[in-house]
Image (cartoon, rainbow, N blue to C red; front, side, top):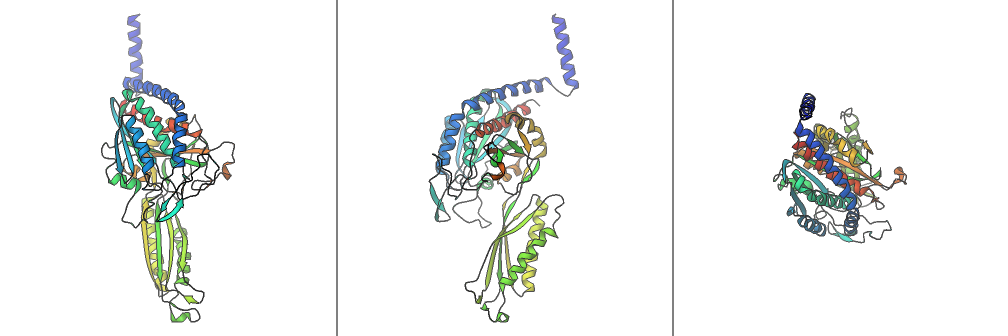
Length: 450
């Protein structure tokens, strides 16, 4: 019997070797499966605490660069778990480091903490009644984009993974990021930085440097608990466009005595549409140039000296993005010149396109399917922007969406993100924890089994 067992073991080992598998990989897979079972059990056990954290953070929203209460809550929690904690990163960011007892790679998980200057309309016992200062003005505050859920999910994820540290092969770094929605205390001017970009510049990803980074975003219009993902370009870049058309003021009854910046700005506005429709190759990826505001003039019978326009430029490709900037400048400046006016064009690069690493995404799709009980779909391109892009620019990254709209609701009529009626079905939170914890665990175990 002993000889037969040895023969069988040798045969199995040979078959595994011939199939490209090793004993170490097989063991790592079995260990990863055991870790998943533990994650599932603990995620359910943590649900009441998870919801309590989310509701507390939701009731006390804070704008970008002012997330002091939230950061303190996070830091205290991470310290209670025995993690190495750094605070004050990018003003109010928190970094926690969990070192597993076993050797292995390093993976990073990110959550954003800031809220929006929005007045909540939902009638909830934990609805926000908070106010804050946005660019020097008092405003109502609300977690209208789900960052309260992101923070609570990552806090629960840290708790679960910390309890597994003796069996964890590698290191998990937790980024609790401020100001994803932008700074609440200053207007971007192209010089100051904030949020993820500032965390990267201040060395958050250097010690330790992760081999991969994962992020998750709550999404309205997607059924609660469903996960959506996309390989490659996923969210757009976001660049501020600021245009000043300078003419010569005169009486509106004698426009020939001046230079009319209003008519020039109208021509420039129409001309900008041809930047996309006639000068940009959109066969591979879409792009957008939109004007959101036009301001000029003080009285009906006065042609003003200046008209100002602001807008946004969006793209999913770095080369197209650079060409768009050049084409927009040329188009506006030449149109202004043709009208004897002068144009000042300022383009502020804010967020890079979020690009999910194709190889990493393919590798982790089975993890998403497990976390969401196979309720996983591929998402189309998203026109919004995310500064998770700065993390994913440093190392391979993957950013996924978690549905939070009640399944009984018509998805087409659900209040979108950034809306006063944005609503989170809290049953989705456990799926979020399963997702983030298993992405980290599966990645580490796969690395340990190489």
